[in-house]
Image (cartoon, rainbow, N blue to C red; front, side, top):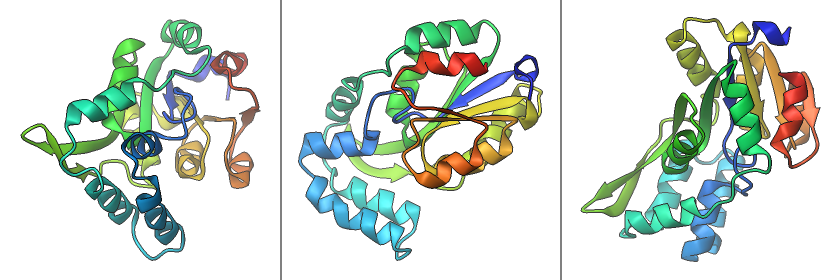
Length: 210
């Protein structure tokens, strides 16, 4: 795919736009719920619970926590090195989207801070300002669906989209996009489904492909 044909660039969030183990993990670490959450991850990867079940079980560990505390934790996550220069440059020629299985709070912050056009993630539900649940929007295999949605909103096909991600849940998006870039891939299977790979924690490195 020629870079001249690309019209939209879609990014994963955790580990790509932000230098993080994951927005879920960051909240667990800050609230001291890592050990309690570990069995949920294991059950998911063993095929014993769904991705939605995993999210619901994790979020129950935060029940009653003030949502402002969650925001405070997420807002402290560092943006990826090179993000400002990279997104400023890309925004001149492309629409920019975030498609994340992480948390909408962080996706919205990055979208607003860097002038991106679309952002979707999973929404923490609150009651009286306290965490009470999760609205799962982006499932483990759903990223291609949102790439199609954003492409349609921009009046283009997914062949005119580039996707940047790092994990196996990005593979459906990679398959859908006209150009796929793995950014410091965290799983061996990822490299079999992309056109280009970056092995450096500097977002500027993707510019040679766009």
